[in-house]
Amino acid sequence: MSKVAVIGGGAAGMMAAYAAGKAGHEVTLFDHNEKIGKKLYITGKGRCNLTNACEREELFSHFSRNDKFLYSAVSQFDNQAVMDFFKKQGLRLKTERGERVFPVSDHSSDVIKTLDKALASVGVKVKLNTLVAGIQIEGGRVSGVAYTSSNASIKSIGSADAGKSDKSITRVENNLHIFNCDAVIIATGGRSYPSTGSDGSGYDLVKKLGHTVTELRPSLVGFNTAESYIPEMQGLSLKNINFTVKDGRRKIYSEFGELLFTHKGISGPVVISASSLIPDECFRKKLSFEIDLKPAMEDAVVDIRIQNDLLENSNRAFRNSLGKLLPSTMIPVMVKLSGIDPEKRSNSVTKKERKHLVELFKHFPGTITGLGGWDEAIITRGGVDVKEVDPSTMESKLVKGLFICGEMLDVDALTGGFNLQIAWSTGHLAGSSVV
Image (tube, rainbow, N blue to C red; front, side):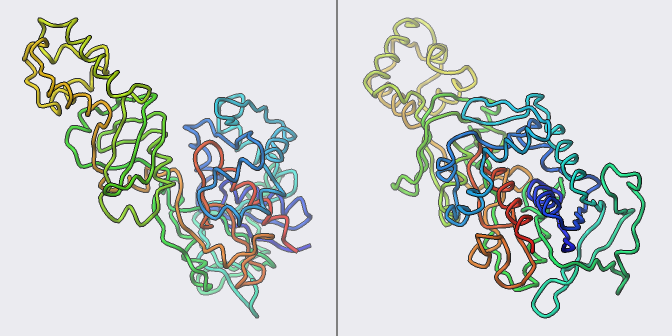
C-alpha cells in the first residue's frame, strides 16, 4: 500500500483520489478552497453535464486537442463507466438533447455529494484551506509535498474524527508543513473561472520539476468584437443561423446553430465551439465573421421575401417593414447598415438598395478583436505537454511517482459533457496506476 497525495479537489482530483483509495492506497486530498468540487458546482449552469451518452468512438471526434493521447484513459474508463459509477453510488441520471447526461435533480450539488460519499467509502482524507507550495523529489521520484494551511484540518469524510487535525503525518520545515508520500497526483485544473480557485498555480508546480507547459489561452468562450452596433443587440439570441469565421478571404470555421449577442461581442454554441476549433495562431490577428440569417434560403428567395414585406407595408416607413423577417432588436441595426433612409416609404426602396439588404441578410458582418477573458472561459486551452506524460498511466516521464490529469494536461474538448469525461477518465487512470 502506498501513501498518495492528490492535489486539487475538482472532478479529476476527486476521481483520482477515489480510484487510488479503491486500489487500497492511503490517500489524502489537498484543496486550497474551503470545500471540494467548487468549480464542478457551477458546471452546466449549475446542473452539471457530467458526460455524454454517445458511442465511445464518437467521444474522440469531440476532443479538440491531442485526442490520441486520451485513447487509453477513455478506453479504460469511458462514458458508460462514468454513468455506471454514479448510478452505483446512488445518483439518478437522465439524458437530454445532444446525448448530454445530467443528474435527474438538475443540481450539481448532488454530483458533489455523490463524490463525497464515494471518497468516504474508500477512506480518502480531505485537507481543505490548504495550498501546496511544492513537490519534493528524492532520487528522481516523489517523496512528499510541502504545504501551507489557513485554518486547515485533515478529515476523513464521514468519520467520527472529521475536522480533527492529524499532526502525526506531517512535520514542519522552513515554515511549511511536509507531507511524506510515495506518489503525487496533481489535478489542480487550468486558469478558467479563477474565482473557483482554478488559478493555474499547478502549472508552476510542474514547471519547477522540469515539465513544459504549452501556451495557455481561454477556450469555449465568446468573442470580443469591434463594431459598435453589436452591443446594441445585447441579449438577442439567433437560432438556425450559419456562422462563418474568415482569415482574410480564407474560411476557417463555419457552423449552423445558435448565436448570442453580448455587451462586448458574440457568444452562444456556434461561437463557443469556434473558440476551441480555430487554430491558436489565428487569434493573433483580427478575424472577420459573417452570419447568414436565412441559411435555408437562396439570395433570390430572400429578395422575394423582402419585396413581399415591402409591398405589404408600401405606405409605411422602411424602418417599420422588416418585422416579419427580423427580431425587433435587430431591425434598427439592419436599417442603419443598409444605408436606406429609415423614414423612406417602403414602396420607394430601389432594386439596388434591396440587393444590398439581401447581402446583409446572407452576410451580416463583424470583426473579432479577441477572446473573452478567463472569468468567462469554460476551459483552458493548453497545459502540460502530453509528450512528457505516459498515456497508459498518466505518470510523468520526468519524475517517478508524479501523475498529472484533468485540465492540467494539454487536452480539451467541445461542450456537451466531453471535458468532464476527460477529467473522469484521466483522473481514474492516474489513481488506478499508482503502484
